[in-house]
Length: 360
Image 1 (cartoon, one colour):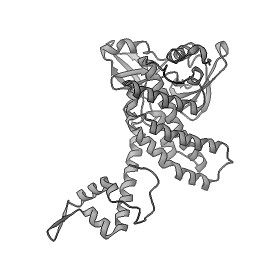
Image 2 (tube, rainbow, N blue to C red):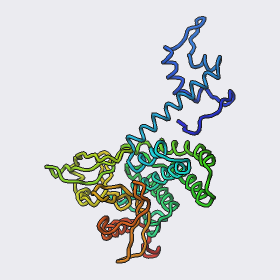
Image 3 (tube, rainbow, N blue to C red):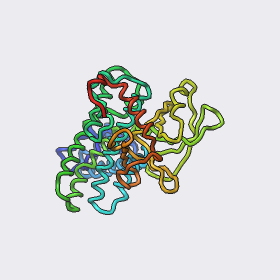
Image 4 (cartoon, rainbow, N blue to C red):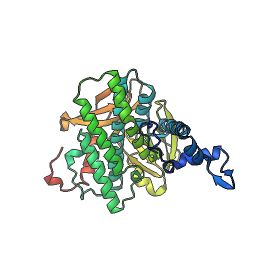
């Protein structure tokens, strides 16, 4: 379904054949085919032919209802980094300027999470990236264009090599192309003067359908649960974790069983310093790209890696915290610099021509 802004009525632009989902539901609601003079007619086609304005009105209501149902699906089933920001865009804004910023935050959250998932899956499965043009310094780059380029290259490589990456169920180059276009729009925003409420409203109207289409395109990401390890259960093949699913920031906890053949690849990451991605029976670490910051009372707030400054003992790591506090540095008490460096080095070891491409 296309979530672009609902079209204005124009009898020449409505295609009966292109709205088969609406036609089928309408026919069912009307009791099936209608017999006229010995012939069988679909109620939807009768309405389309005899009263096109009425057909259009019913079609718009059907589409709007589908959009609202899909939004509720995102709020409840998508990973928290996307669901939380998107719900704020829809329900939690104070003015149109803030709402426009939240729309941008929504598509950037999609980019950050897709990047974290695909790079972390390559790291987890130890799939080589040597047939890409990815440079080591790009792995920790703060440029969104770099992250989109890496996502695109890793998708292409995974398809060419038939790598069984779980993320291929929801990441595609078509989605990347749409995100790249929105990022171009974002760059235009950042170089323009402050917009009035009316200008913001018009910009939102222009691009929110694109964001909804992207969310629909990655809807299988709802099968992902982001989790923070809490404790081991009685069995070594089961652990308790905190869930980060849906728009709510209320803390929820679950238990997860580990398949025996996956224990070796998972056990190293089962500690409270890591954020995990759970996708069916696959469990892998998405830290340091998705991490958390403990608040004053010890509750974890999810955050995305944004950039690093300095190196060695002067290394500073900056993360965007989901609670709206913005980009902040995380100290050693929040994330181990040694763990960060080790994780990045594991990924760099999968890249091509490490000696000749520079380092970060």
